[in-house]
Structures are given as structure tokens and as C-alpha cells.
Amino acid sequence: METQSSAFNVDLVVIGGGPTGLLSAVLARALGLSVYIILLSDAKNGALDVGRADALNARTQQYLEVTKTLPFLEPYGLKCNTSSTFEGGQFTSQQNQWWTSLKHTHRPNFLMIGQSQVEEALLHQLDIPVDYNSQVNGIEETASGVVVTTDKGKTIAAKYAIAADGARSFVRTTLGIPFTGTKPEMVWAVLDAFIETDFPVCPEIITFQKDGQSRVAWIPRERGMNRFYILLDGEITQEKAETSIRDHMAPHKIEFKKTEWFSTFEIKERVASTFISQDGNGRILLAGDAAHVHAVNGGQGLNTGIADAFNLIWRVALVAKGHGGATLLKSYDAERRATATAVIEVAAKLVRTTVKTALEYVEIIEKNAGYITGMGVSYSSTTPLVVDSSYGDFVAGDRCPDLWVTKLPIRSSQTNAKEQSRIRLYELFGYGKFKVLFLGKEKPTSSEWAIELQQKAEMWHIHDQDRRLTTLTHEFSAEWAKSDEGAVVVVRPDFGVPFLARV
Image (cartoon, rainbow, N blue to C red):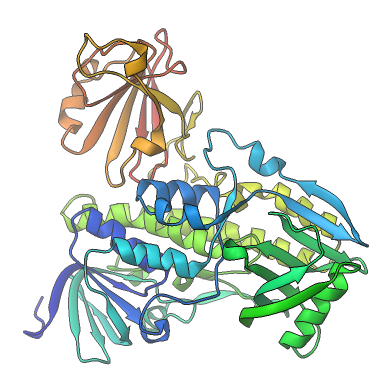
């Protein structure tokens, strides 16, 4: 590709410095891609200071554990897995069954923490400079790559581009990709504040009901800060928002000591008609809010964007290195666009139920807990990389369960149980390679294609013996891998299970 002599030449250019864009860059760097990342001019010369997203669901925490990001966040966040309703001076329900009933989930809770801290943690992990406070003013695509220009006179030539530049995406608009959907006539106020109250403060998400409607929600946050979502009629002001909160919390009193952020957001529900340029055949890929927007109810925005990045980057890395092709990238569009549509449906149900009773609101949460926790998001066999099959707790299209295994000593003489230790799969997993799990009686040496796969995938052997049976690096024991049964499970680089074979 011919470009100006001053152009930056990279494998991937990432446009947008929110969590989706930053994580995309972190993952791409971990897989060896050269990356140029542009934080747009509304990023205020760096990561976000306050406001916006406020919760990491269980699936996102799994992802960020694998990337080693979670240790930067977990000590500062607040764990929350209970949704309560309050009316007439008393709690009318307190429920967390949709969290506590999750199988093979090490963190069955939200981690309440601000988007600004997520962005700061990801920036800390980046090993490349970031182009702050620039505006993309041009993007062109050829058969061999993408050229991006900025208002600072820079030109970036890349094999692929990721547009994570928000709901008003310049890239999506420039490409002419339709962004259609509905727009309920609802505008919410959001208030982040430090308070004093005689209300029985608890680490729960509380929905307040008054006059048969649930127009105020209280979200506990890190640092002793509190977030309130308020649905108001007519003009929206901070004073009216605070008055509504007081009315809903009565007879308890509340004093707003310091407001950290007050804003409004209009409910919009949009999905791009394609997440890939040139009707699915191009080199520019949409992710995060550039690809889909929806109501904030259920905490889906940041979490869905993080999942986009995990689903996408391993594919980009493979095709950038000459493996895979158009089908591999198209499967990103098929999987994530279907997920975005489902997420919008869930958030839409939640936002429309706020004008009903709090109990109805909580019932909607329970029915759609799979998306709210993230653990129920799966990919259909109608998409290219999933084949209907199952074995035990492994189901094609679902996430790989976070099962416990026991490390086996490298030397056969080391069989003392004290020298063995239990560990979860997600503590062991790394991002970017396929993992082929030989379970139970099935041994890697019995499959002819195992040797051929070793350069492209990790070979794992998990069985119920207390000693090593192979020389594989990844060999573990587990009671659930029965020696009288056998199966081969393939785990994708984003920890989904595409297919299984019983032996």
C-alpha cells in the first residue's frame, strides 16, 4: 500500500480510547501485533475522569482475570450481587438467586467500579504510546489495508482498523453503515454523590417504588460513593433529581454532601447493520458503542464492549498473520451482532419496566440474568464456529466453565498430595490460542492430528489419576474427568467452546 513517507505503518489501528478500544489494544499487543491507538478529542487528554459505566459483570471479571487487569481493579471495587426493592419505608424483597445459582463461576457478583478506573488500569498495561486528543478526519480502505488521517496531520497505514469511537462514531458514519433501532421517549438523570443518610446502607442495588412505579435506583459504588438513576418528568435538573431521591427514600433522610457527576442520558437502542465494512468483507471493524447502543439498565454497555474486544482480537491476529480469512472475521459479525440485538432486548425490557412496580422490574432481571451476569451469553450453531455438541458441563456455544483442576508434579517421584495444588482453569488460561482438552481416558497421543495442532494450539490432558501420563506441559487431574469416559473439547481463544467430540 502506498502511503506518505511520514505514515505510521502498523498491523492494527484502534480508534477510540474507551474500555473497548483500550482492551483491544492490550490484547493485540499481547498477541504480537503492532498497534496505533487514537484517543479521540473528547477524551480530555487521557482516561475518563468520572461518570459513565459503573459495573463489571461476572463474565467481564473472568476476561479481565485472564488479561491480569483485574488485580488493578478488584481491591478498589465493591462486590454486589443482591437486588432489593424498597417501598413505604421498608424493604419488600431482597434477591440474589440469579447470582448465587451460577455454576462454575468464581465471582458471582458485579464488581462496582467506575469506568475511569477501568480505563486507567488498561492504560497502565499498554506498552505503546497513545495518541491523545486527536480527531480522525479521514479513513479509506483498499484491498490491502486501511489509511487513517487525523486533524494533527498524522497518517496511519494499517492492515486492519477497529472503530471503537462511540455511539456517534465518525468511522461508522463515514462508511455509511446504517445504525437503526428505536428511541423510547425516556431521558434519565444520573447522579454520583457522597451522601449522609440514616437509611440502612448495604451493598445492594436498590430499586425504590413510589405510587406504583420504580423511578429511582440506588447503585453502591467504590470509594463510598453512590450512584442514583432517576426518571423525571418535564425539565431535568439536579435539584429535581435530589428531591425525587428524597421522596423515594422517605421516611429516611439523605443529605448530598458532594456531587462528583451529574448528567442526563437519552435512551437509544441501535445496532449497526454490519460490524464489518464492505458488507462483511472489509478491513474496518466496529466494536462497543460504535456497533450498538442501548439503555444503561442491567449494566450492559461496558461489559458488552469488553466481550466484543475478546471475541474480535484473536481473529484479527490470526488473519493479520496470514491465517484464517474472511469467514473467520465474518463470524465475529454473526456472533456479536446477534448478542448485541439480544442485549438491547433485555435492556429495553428493563428500562420500560421502570414505570411499573419494583417487583416487576426485579422479575425481569431474574428472567434475563444470563445477559446481566454475562454467564448466559452463548453463540448459536447457526454461526460458523459452533457445532452442536456437549460433554458434562461443556456445551458448544457456551463459555468454558471455570472448573477446578489439580496441578501434577513434573517429576513422577513427586506424588505427595501436599506438593499438588488445586487451581481454576481461568487462573491458568491465557488469551490468544486454541486449547484442545483431552479429557478422561482420551490421550493426546491417540489422536493423529494432535501433533499437527501443537504449533497452533495448546494441548491439555485432564484425567482423574494422581500422576502424570504424558510429557505435556498442561497436564492436570480432576475428579470430573472420569477415566472410564473420554472426550476432546476445543476451547476458543476467547474461551467459548465451539465443539466437542466424545470418545
